[in-house]
Length: 413
Ligand SMILES: Cc1cc2nc3c(=O)[nH]c(=O)nc-3n(C[C@H](O)[C@H](O)[C@H](O)COP(=O)(O)OP(=O)(O)OC[C@H]3O[C@@H](n4cnc5c(N)ncnc54)[C@H](O)[C@@H]3O)c2cc1C
Ligand code: SF4
Image 1: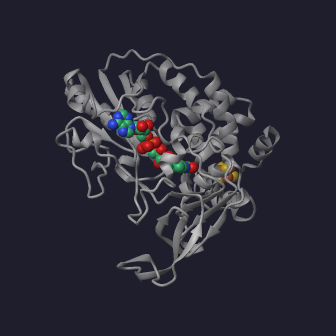
Image 2: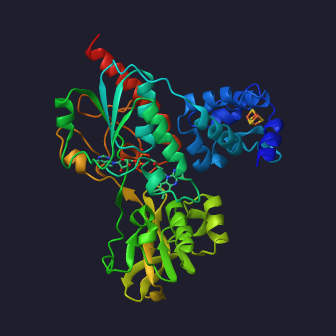
Image 3: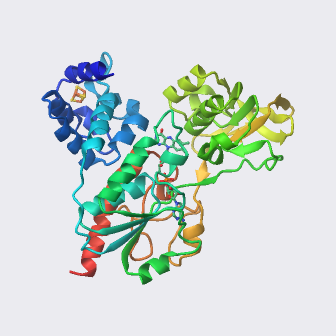
C-alpha cells in the first residue's frame, strides 16, 4: 500500500487551480498535503488535514470520492485520477497516532452536545479549540453514531472511533455515554445547569416502514436495527434485502459475513434509478448478492416475501413512483427479510422540549448557520438534512460551530 501511496502522490501535477479541492465539500487542501508528504513533512500534512476536517481519516474510508476529490482531479479526464483517498488515509492514520492536543482553558462557558456522530464530533473539536467546556451526551454506550452502529467494520474499522474518542478526551471534552436527552434529562435541565448553548446532532434512527402486511413477523427486520449488532440475529441461509441504496448493500454484505448463503437485493426500480454508489453495488455483487430489479415487496409471509412486478407511474414534473402491477404477485422464498428503505428522526428531544420547530418529516428546522427556532439551541447533520453523508455533516457543522461561538460571545460581550 505504501508504495502505491508514494507513486500516486508523485503523479500529482500540483495544479495551480486544484480541481480536487473544489470537488471536496470541505475543500481539503489536497495539493498542499501531497506536496508536504513528498517533502517528508508528514506531520505537517496531517495537521493540515486534521485542522480542516477532524474526521479526515473516516472520510478517507467512506466518502464517495468518485464524485468529489477524485472525480474532479484533472488526471481523471484522460486516465486515472490521483488516488486521493489512499493518500489522505495514510497521512491521517499516521497523524491520529502522534497528535497531542493542547488541553483547552475551558474558560468560555459550557456547551452541551447531544449526539456523538460526525456532526457532534466536529462541533466538539471545533469548540474545544476555542476554549469551551464541552460535554457530549450520547444515547449509546460508545461514540460514533452511524460510524459505529451502522457502517460495517469491513468498510470502517471501529478502532478509528476509539482513537477519536481518546483524542476528544485529550482535547478536554467530557463524554456521558448511555444518556439519551429527552428521556430523563432534557434540554431545559441543560440550560438550568448553566450550559450556554445546546447542540443537537441526533441523526435519523427511526427506520422507514413499508406499511405492508406481515411487517411485524419474526422473520422481518429493519436495516438500521440489524446493522447495529448483526451477530445477535439468526437470519438463516436465504435472505431478501428490500431496497436499492447504500444501506441495502451494507446489509447484504454483512449478512454474507454472518453466515447467510444466498442474499437477494430487491429493488423496485430499474438499474438506472438505483441510488447506491456504483462501487457499493459492485462489491455487493462480488460478495455474491443477486440484484433483482423492477420488483416490489407487497407482503411478508412466514415462507418469504411476495413480490410483484413494478412499473413507473407519474411524470418528472409531478413526481415519479414505482408501483406494483396487480396480478403479477409470486412468493420469493427466503428465511429472513430486511427492510432497507430509509430512516427518519426520532422525536424524543423535540417532544420533551418547547419551541423547536420541525418539518413535516420531523426534521429540525434551522437557518443556514444551524440556529433552531429556540434561542441557544443549534442543530446540524442528518437530523436537519435527512440521511446524507459524513462529509456533509462535517461541512455544515464547521459553520454551526462558528455560529455557536458567535452566539455565546454575544451573551457576554
Ligand atoms: C448503514 C449506513 C451506511 C452509511 N454509509 C455511508 C458512507 O459510506 N459514507 C458516508 O459519507 N455516509 C454514509 N452514511 C451516512 C452517514 O453515516 C450519516 O450521514 C452521518 O453519520 C450523519 O451524522 P450525524 O452526526 O448527523 O448523525 P449520526 O451518525 O446518526 O449520529 C447521531 C448520534 O446521536 C445520538 N443520539 C440520538 N438521539 C439522542 C438523544 N436523545 N440523546 C443523546 N444522543 C442521541 C445517536 O445515538 C448517535 O450516536 C451511511 C448511513 C448508514 C445508515
Ligand atoms: S487535481 Fe489531481 S493532479 Fe491536480 S492537484 Fe489535485 S490531485 Fe493533484
